[in-house]
Image (cartoon, rainbow, N blue to C red; front, side, top):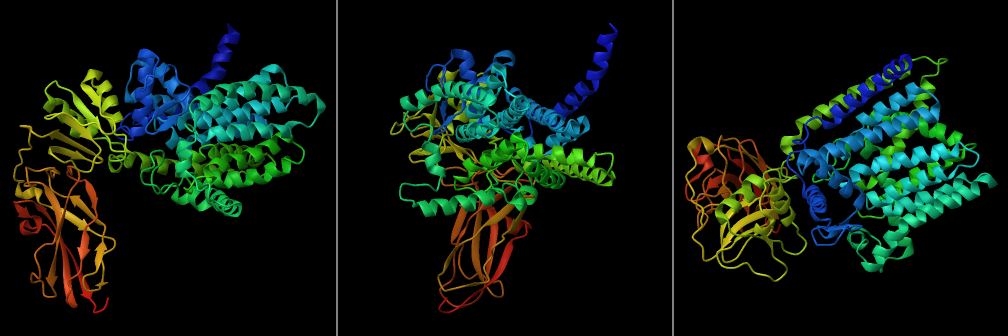
Length: 635
């Protein structure tokens, strides 16, 4: 009894720490990020189908890879999510809690690795804290996509190889653990299909004694057996697993060796750019696994990793595992460096695992009792302070990200479609290269809609007259447009009695803030320019994107030319409708095409919002955007 109590006392702090860690990673789930990204819906929908029939959306039974969104998803996360759905039912919350749990497990694995590398529990604890607060790992754990499990797979590889490398000749169990970790890397995320074999080759660096040859060959054999299903799948589905890569890579049949080598060096160095790691992060504003403009690695983490890298290089002279580690760090960057993008956070998801692991030896060195603790305290203070700031920024950011995650698709597109169809079929159509249908199918599952109500149209298929259609087309012919949302339209095929009944906005709704980062100062006569204009709804009412037949009551941006003294020079020449209902406080980016007057002189270019057929916002007190433009003769 005493031993049991003592064991509970020892485990209680660790258990409490794990609970706090999960609370941090699960805070705001499922509403942050808002909505559910199309990639998340694709994975979740297929996981749900697996629980129902053991088949994916294309009817393939227990597939090794899941065909969806013109891509093939790796299986590990999908089947794991299917198990969660089997137990808890399909939901956004269940999917995102799974990703949060995987993120915490990755941090725990890294903390354990840090303790084993240094023999210092406090160094392991600091490594665990570093992993928890790293924006890169945190961002990957907030979305329900297959890459959420990838850092854990890489961390398990490092743990299993460290355990094996400490033995003169590791046993079959060690070989099985290493091979299983490699298989998990391979089947968890697309880049793992290259990273896994590269890491497997790197195991040769552990061959420092003859006694290790047999276990090494055993590991390779076990991993090779794990790759057999992948080989068979590729033979049965030629090009399936490389199709998407061919779109993303700079390596083409026409590329020369020197050109490919130069591009690889540029991308490899770009993917290790410290400025991008610490300051700008992944600059793609549609990147779902990070906050745009926020660094992915904390400054304290980066500093510790640099110190740890120096210690690792020193240790690598006499420790084969550290040589494998350094090789693995380099290998983790290779797959992403073969694609066109620079610093694509998900494709580089293995890199932060290595960077965080490097923090352990640096932390242990600072905790050495022979050295002053000032540096350690400063690092911890900076780590916690910057980590807390990132958490604040992350939780303050969701309202700005709703459009990336299709947060309003259920209310703005799906619900009106189901209501207007009056129990009849809703047709789903996507032009080539688009796959919005999956959002309707997944949200239909969440809403308890009978799957038979959705009919997906293939290429060349036409919906019948009067049909209700959800589409990712920019416009439709022979239709009555009913609703628009970011990337989606809802319409009824003519002839139909369905139509939008518009209404005049109240005067207090006619308020807008209009800005532009690229207003011209000079133009040539008749010169055309495409500008970027940002409009924010300052009124208390939503601006409709769709009006009555002919566009009446829809809200749009218009511009017109005035003389230097503000007198009208020409009637408005161009308009652009807002392409989704702009809620109060929302901002929308528009791209007006401006053509300069043919006569040289000084002019004023004015932008204003209008409700078509009703009023200009400026006439009701809203501030317009004006820019003085000089039209120069001869351009």
